[in-house]
Length: 141
Image 1 (cartoon, rainbow, N blue to C red):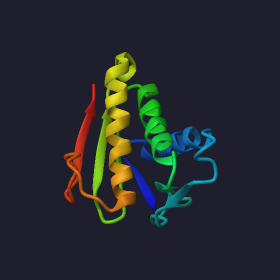
Image 2: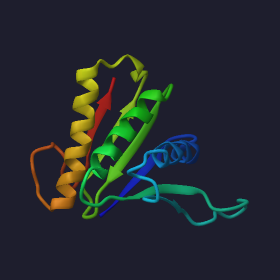
Image 3: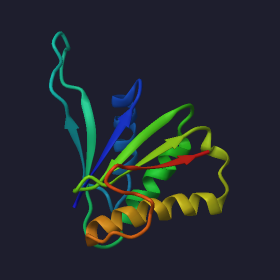
């Protein structure tokens, strides 16, 4: 199953490059993270990084992915918004604003929410994560 991660706002390509580098350092995700480039805009020097595509299979890859995304968000300063989309269109938006102060319980909850979403996508199950076809939103504060 491929999970797509897109960033929104100014500097989104740089944010995606940073997240991609972060995820590629995880042993379980090595070789599973790819870049998806958008079309070259008129007058641009080249394509723009549009999204990351992460191939997740059975096992601990979903948890490694969720842990990596939350840890990366926690290391960011300022406004960062990403959207994780599963095949079929279900998605989860994560917004991080000064999250360095989150306690251990809050971090575990965020990792669990994201891992549950990804695991449900692998199983094809619904569940009650609060995420539907129109997208869900979790804000880390």
